[in-house]
Length: 496
Ligand SMILES: [Zn+2]
Image (tube, rainbow, N blue to C red; front, side, top):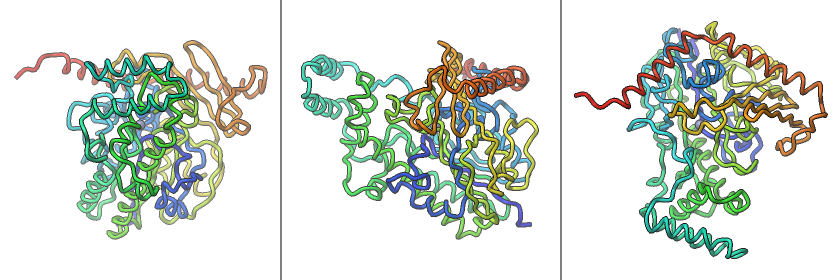
């Protein structure tokens, strides 16, 4: 006994690749993970298979494309093979602690295979607030005041700062005074999740284990721990100011130009969320080291998607254009007994993460997985096959409503240098040269790079063809039945 490796998988919601230190960020958001990166594999171009959360996790845990069972199916299907189901069968102790993200709850099949599953959702899962329309404005006098403010704003011209001040006062009046950032926070912070994880880890004994943690600290609304702000910068921020910034950032009546006034302050709050996740990873691993569980432990940290800060005029992480700020995430992989190698800059799709983790633990991946292990290439520092496909349904910001799920597909095919983005309604395609234009500011002219365009289009077409031809209809049916049952339970009156 003793040689079977345990696995810890940490997913941090909304964590962009370019905001962590080991990927070159200027601000010290991740000192602990940076030190761990020195003995870990760091994937320069890890790409999610879909964004946001509900289009990303079917690939992370189930190693399949998010729309493979049809656009209207979300989550893992009942009894679908996953990283967890394999490890459970192998006799692993399994647990998940997730910081209250409704899209990876039991309702969507994510509890399957876990001995212990805590999603910290105390009521019936509902959509996350900022993914609805930006609606912080209540009815009544306060709302009328805000409308008046909006009406006079154009007249203020360059005196917009006066308007900002009035809006600040407005925010103070419509929401009850909260004394601390802790009181404003919507999700359990990483220290709470790590506390639960440590308690569970102390109970597993000699068994190999699989632990999945999902952290929400960088997720909007951005209310980080005070301590994290102190760790990251000198000046503190009052709860009132943080609330104002979040309200401002959530406004639907302002364009990117005005929102940009407070962009840096909002990013500072977001970064502090990352800093706290990093701090708590340090605590988790110190605890694993102390118990000697770290000696045989594979550790992977990644994200389900990134976050927009006006890079292309947008905020948060709605399913839309699959831009790099949403699909490029960090991926750090520590495997005991292996020697760190520099990895290829070719994209590595998170579709391949689960089979790669199983392979690193010397376990076989199920035949149903669409992803394949890249452990040999990682271990030897060789290149990956180099194409990552990501997909989502445009405009589906509330997946609890089935009508929202059946919009048109958006697909991106990313190679090391080129990236093609396809929209279907209205039809359109954009080809980017990421070497010359890493910020995806200007798609190439239709006549440019014809051979590349043709090649990537062909890959997209093949992906679409396989997606419908190889669809597992029984799995799809099972998932649809689960949905119908939930809808029925919700709409029918309570029977005693
Ligand atoms: Zn997410």
